[in-house]
Length: 432
Image (tube, rainbow, N blue to C red; front, side, top):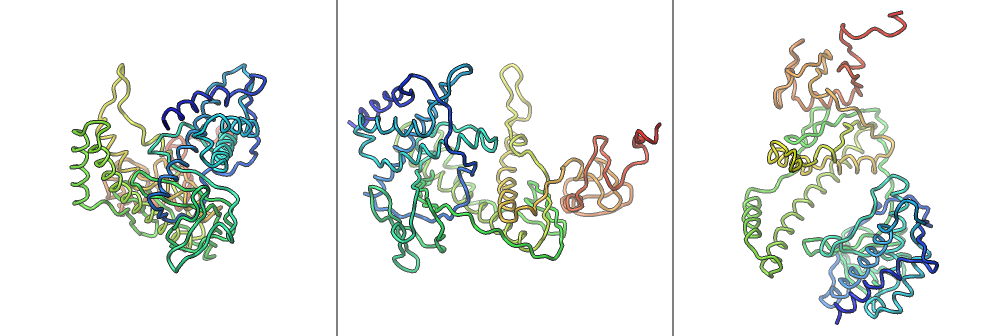
């Protein structure tokens, strides 16, 4: 019966997508350009089995409404009138709830919040700060938001390590009080990850870490063998998965390849793999949080390479007409880059130390001698650096970090702004 109601609700997408005049409006009434996933304080949620069933229904309702809004935008073409905005979508949602028992059984607050989130996501897209909103898939993008939270009546503390938050249609749901809940939280979001863990995140922008005022500058060179090399000589690496867990992950992946799609056995294996992956992700995030906090507290200026990580981790498989080369090697390099937390480390640094993080052009920083400025590919051999001009020796990543800390800007001819070669082109005034 539930499947029939969901299909009937999906059939109402046309009435939910069109305005009363049959035209489409693209107007977004949410003028805010804040990030959809802003800074949050996340806590582990522990619902009962009965509460978990209702939470999953809330996730399904929010995902269904979001996907309908995405479908409305996908209908727009050049020359047509714009798609419905937030106000019109709320009116259409009211009509859809009146016709669908499945939607009407859910929370109007949660479903309306999904439309508000979509409107903000479209505003971010038009503001060119985020990508276009896409479809949400069951089991992958599970979650919903609740707005207008009052600390006095929506959150309460039960004991030293246990608190409770009020969720619409459910009541009080317990969560682990691992840190103080922000007093200025006006909304929260409940999520379910692939490992089966529930979390509640209260939206609150934390205060930035104050600068120490010592005038010190540090450069960070990010790599695969060494996750982050500091110009002061420190070598920091993300803790990797233990050999036992790696062998278990490989064994589970082989077992997954033999399992039949849609079977309970395959679902159990996928859950076991997700839990291993979740632990690896948690360790990486914990390392990035602690490292970024330490660097923000110790240095006034933090310089990093301006890397295009999305372009660097693209697949090399190519197409049928032009197949790629060394695809497996490139895939391994991509896993190493993503597993080192390059992007998350810089993102958290910019959030914790706003205005104190500078991006430096990365070209030739690894093959340029920090002592004399000589740039040659033969200077670097793996992790060892030996300048062929002056004989300077150093760790290759530390030498690159020192170049980044100096803020070297490399020209198109491969020369550095500080130490230029004798064969460089003369300025226009001198040549004249």
